[in-house]
Image (cartoon, rainbow, N blue to C red; front, side, top):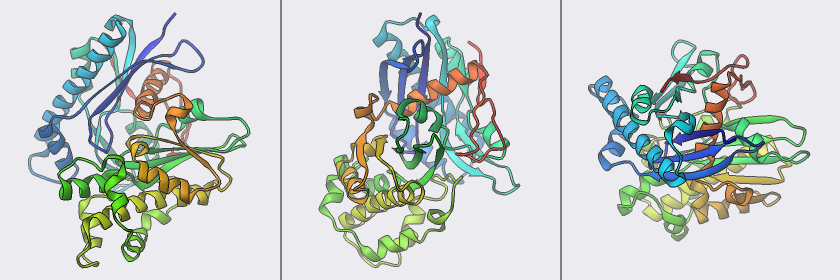
Length: 369
């Protein structure tokens, strides 16, 4: 008998919402349907603006959360229609929300992570139970609150006796390392697409560098690359996580100010190299014997970036997650369907090796239909 859950993910790339309807009745979940929706331009701009301090934030966050839930609801409707599944057949929706601040362990020792969401509204709009706010319990338990997907990565991509890495390149890049001995490590490497997308939008008017073709036309600026790599975050040991709080346009502009005038395509090429180097350096630092690197998220569609990862990690087979049975735009959404099921079943996740939390916790808050 089917056991249906929906997972909804909107990440730091701010490109929209990905959703899956997955059946968990067998050992490995089966994705029945996938749908996505872009953010309306005004919502995209507001979500980006809310990553920085501004006027009237409480009011703006509340309305942006409402608007976000309407996009989420649209994706749910598309999933149900595409699969001819009634809402009553869905056990729960796992809704990530939109991260606008991520400052764990800062200020008072606990810190916070903030995902815009109005899960009660989503439950009203869909008539389905909603599981949300996955990260705050982990932060309360002394963890980073991110990344949360490594246990799902282990369940889907793990191979006994082989070292496998799973690299999700969204706005921020996060890495899961599955050791040949069964060990698990997960953390954020640094910027993924966020800096590249911002630079591309400023200089081409396009939201992103499709396929990395613009970056491929430029040349890496060695002095700029080294300056960017001096960022202390790259030298920190896990557990660690980051976001647009650090890797944002102001951070980039501060470094560019020391370089004089540079060709925009050369800067784009350098930013792609920064992402590739940050990720490959972490692989080599923590799992030098890696056999496979599975790449998902929007960055896996950047052919130039994938080529650089392959060149920097010649001993590993670098491939997209689609080669492992799950398309690159479905991995994170499926992970949040998986996490929602864990919450419904009151199953604890021990994230000490990824987030640094004090122990196993049930994550997420439940909003009944």
